[in-house]
Length: 266
Ligand SMILES: [Zn+2]
Image (cartoon, rainbow, N blue to C red; front, side, top):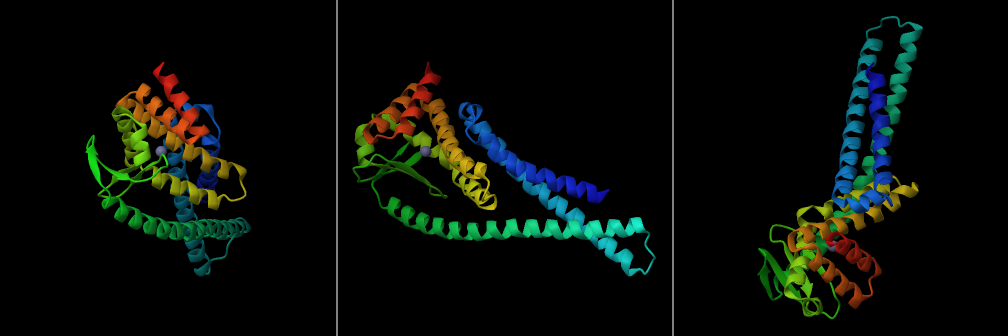
């Protein structure tokens, strides 16, 4: 019974791991409901991880019981011998699958964590030294630059950094929507989510849907942040900010995001 249950849990876990990328990869409903799509993907990922872990625990417990029975010296029937072989086979296969996934994830995670920590330390230190102000309760720093860009620096002293070129391009309301957009990335944990998506992509390397899902999740994070900014500052203002930046930088993806946000205002 527990062998069947653990095998079912394990199969469901793999199905969830594959279903998540398929769910968010180039789907219209995901573009219409980016926050829901991101939550659904995260839920499938966490559910899959829990299912795989629980299935592994169950099969290892069955293997321990079989080992105890064999150690007792009792004569096993042919059926019990088959069951013991199946339990050992399943426990080896599941352990190997989980160990491989954990090793790949740990390798990728340690590399990206070190890389991100280094970037965070440099950007936070640089951002803290920039002149700034508080906009809607968010610390805003100005970076002298001719490119049109904005970014959030995470952590306890999180802040949003915008370039002087972007500040000149936008009016006050549009700037507030940019701050709301970057704050949404920080508050909704998009950095962590995209990091996990990257790990999933590594674990599912070879599956075309995994690479596509990674790109889709990055876009959905942008759309979810656009929606949050539109709710806070109004869709017209948010669409106008996106359109101005798209026009100035020639960013076609941002032009489409501006059109999507303006349609929500209509
Ligand atoms: Zn963004």
